[in-house]
Amino acid sequence: MERTYSQINEKIKKGEAVVVTAEEIIDIVEKEGLDNAYEKIDVVTTATFGAMCSSGCFLNFGHSKPKIRMSEAWLNDVRVYTGIAAVDSYLGATELQYNDPENRYFPGNFKYGGGHVIEDLISGKDVQLFALSYGTDEYPRKEIRTMINIRDLNQAIMVNPRNCYQNYNVAVNAHKDRTIYTYLGQLKPNMQNAVYATTGQLSPLLNDPTYRTIGVGTRVWLAGAHGHVYSQGTQHCSECERGDNDVPMEGAGTLALTADMKKMNPEFVRGVSMRGYGVSLALGVGVPIPILDKEILKATCVKDEDIYAPVIDYSHEYPNRNPGIVKKVSYGELKSGKIIIDNKEVKTSSTSSYSKARKIAILLKKEIVEGKFLLNEPFEKLPSNQGFMKLEIRGGKK
Image 1 (tube, rainbow, N blue to C red):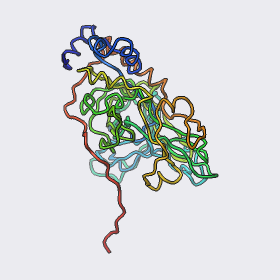
Image 2 (cartoon, rainbow, N blue to C red; image 1 turned 30 degrees about the vertical axis):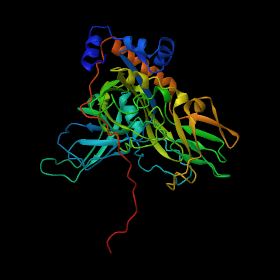
Image 3 (cartoon, helix red, strand yellow; image 1 turned 60 degrees about the vertical axis):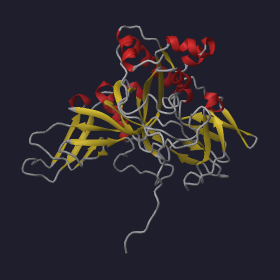
Image 4 (tube, helix red, strand yellow; image 1 turned 180 degrees about the vertical axis):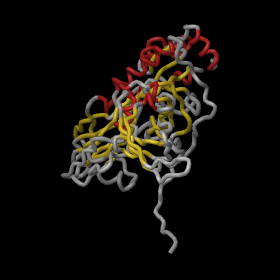
């Protein structure tokens, strides 16, 4: 018999819901069988923690006396976008600090940027606001410099266009003698190391491969705050190669997420410096999966051994948008610490933290069990047959 969101939420409110993590459900189903597990399990919690470059936040500073219509603004010398209302702004996670030397002295260190400002704000630190204006009758001030704190802001709303990639590349460097620096970290020549980027069997969209429960309106745990999916994420590409278990074997679905920064836990928000590449923001995300039927439960039993990712050369194939794949490997292989390429052992590492993801899945489980986190039924499904458009270079008018 199938369940509904309302039925599960009623059990949560009464303290009767049985909730397990995506890690725990694997052993439960193996020991008790799918049918028996379905009779007792109501919710499976999933989670991930890692760098999510397409993140940022809307901030409202309130009005000074006299008022200012900000046309340019910086927080700790990191520029924020002000092309909206007078004292609204958007801070992007990958924005660099003013006068950062970037890669002029390669590889650049990128010590501070948008992700670090977001971390500082959520941590309760003071940051410097500097803003300029051309001045208007109703907004006469032309310059302001002051210290602000997240408690001083009317709103601080994280609005992330692309989080929680469903699967991702494993990066290697096929160049013979040159180390390269990427958003997945440092890659040594001759494929001496390989770097991957998701939490595998704990990752949200890998536990809901065909988007049956995760969609627009789904409630999520975003760095400790209760937020939601507000759209498909940018670069959402569900039309991809999939295994017999429907799990994508390449980058696929993505989520656009939002939540109140004032309610976030700084433990799960970290500014990231990527040598030779730039700055980013590492985030913790938890997503509950309601067990509405046995097929949904079966999907949450996916193991690292059954999830495959493509190994891509980031020295030539990736930057030149070539389709070449070195091979496909499972997350079981990746998490063992080494994979085999051309009969050679290659060390592996991850930009995601499995231990942090496990902690998030447990924290979300606890909140649901205690009746503090209810589930939302999506009001719109994520696209299930959407491809990915490429940017082609065309000549302008002469």
